[in-house]
Image (cartoon, rainbow, N blue to C red):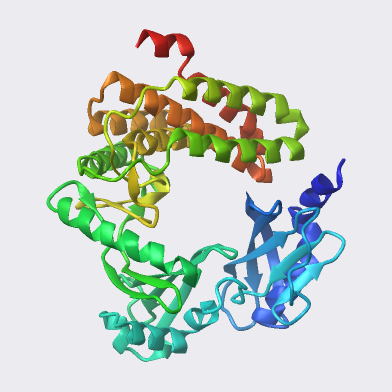
Length: 434
């Protein structure tokens, strides 16, 4: 076993890293607390050769009436990557032998303002400073409940603010990101507003932007009530929700875009080659299957028909991005909005339907039915678009295989995901015939 594999295996073993994580939690919360359970839900390849590892900790201490589910993120350095400057100072804990760094949340070296937005008193003041118009900004800070909804080390943290006195009332979502990205977010917001206006009175709903703090790198949005499509467990509700998602995506793709395609096949292949190489090095037993899937995608991509039209696309459209409400579907996370091939969104959603069916065999029929409802609601497309949808679906399945190879709980899905990729990938004969 190579050093990298040994370190990755150890760093994703909850019992190996438990002492370090408990130390980090006690520094953040209560010195007498204990970790009831530790899970590793995600591990993500980094461009510098390392891995970001997410730890979910069920934490109990005397300050809380019941256990809390909390997140920490660690950074497993690449073999040749140096220790970051200043990592020996306050804010970091480390395991020297594994070359694992764990910032003590809410400290994040790339999100310097994050602590301000996690503390109720300063969070309320920052909302007022940014000009957020919401009932929460008029309440005392000790009435504010702050929850972490999602966190990716050195990338972004999604926080939810609600009133303690009115916990059922919709609150505010704050997305804290690297300040240098705020220019791109500003540009995306202009597109979002244009798309939102064009989508008015259609099946597509977009969360309302409340304010942007450009200096600190924070985007505020109104919280949208509803349930994620991913969390619907009644088959009829899932089918109806997928149909709503199909109509919402059709509404988005009906809005033309004059710019050039933003994510062509060549860029996707470059990303996939890097991910396949990384996953193959870590898991040699899957290397041949990874390479076979990549070879099929490359061959199909070289003779794939050009996109028949360029529209606004979401670029990360899948079940967890769709909230189902009584009024319809609200689509979340518009940071990546761009001009591109609508088949990319369509194929990505269908690939996640394949994934959910594999993750939950008992609900596989419901998810397949949902995928059919989504396709029917989206409506007919031309032959070239169908082939491109198949290619993007296969591409997303390969990408998911490389991601889930890094998650211990789901590593058994790698082989079936790669098989699904090969099945979805358009073959040369079909392409030539079309």
